[in-house]
View (cartoon, each protein chain N blue to C red):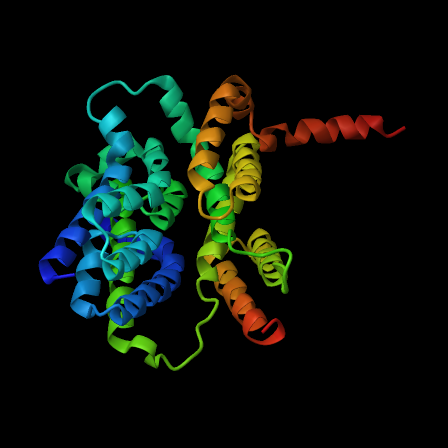
Length: 109
Length: 250
């Protein structure tokens, strides 16, 4: 690609990414009254979307081949247990990540 | 005083994203540099696109010489999940005033999830806090991209697995939402539907159909969920249930 082609390609990617995020605001934003069902969805979607994002992060885990998602399972259990106990986001994320890195670099390498 | 409290609040909320973004961003920088684009390109791409999986796709589009329609189609498809994120912020982003367009632009998976956990707090300007969280996340992401492209493969420690910090963050935010919500139907629907679609459609195509079905199911269960959410909180019911237990004792 020439420099100009690269710049245009990046610009297209930037605009298209923005469009996906703009979509609901363009549809329901501004001064118009937001339909009740949309407000309802906005209220209840966060836990559903965050649950989907967890699965999205784990999509490449192969249960049939070694290590069969065991490092992920152990680390997620640690994150959940720590968070229910201490409610400290940084501690839960930090400890869980270090646990996972150690597991896949040593025990399950 | 309010300004500095808001700043601290926003920074502490954004901190868990920092590690993930620095390392995921630098993974992008390394890939981009290997495709023949230096750190200046990394800076501008992370500044203007600001999307994790979207930017990894962009590297392969750039090195593969993709046409513009193909670039547009692939980018729209990989980021299609974002069309649902704004629904939760239609009203709340208005509190950010002139930063409204930036808030929409910067609504990544991680910023969305963290913003969902922002609640009004004393001495914290909510609109400003939301803007600062988005801005901090953006800065981490840009810094990661530039560092990755500059340092390349010369990073001294083996960072394999650091991307798990994003998974861990989503698990934490999921728990927070779970404890916060009186109805667990939305969380369970999201979890169950995405698992089923992952198994049915495989890792590359499941997320959009999964979110569409989740939205449909939640709309169908609107009355059920709303009724549950309007119930008095379990804390208020606590003493009552204790009393009834005592009565059961012979």
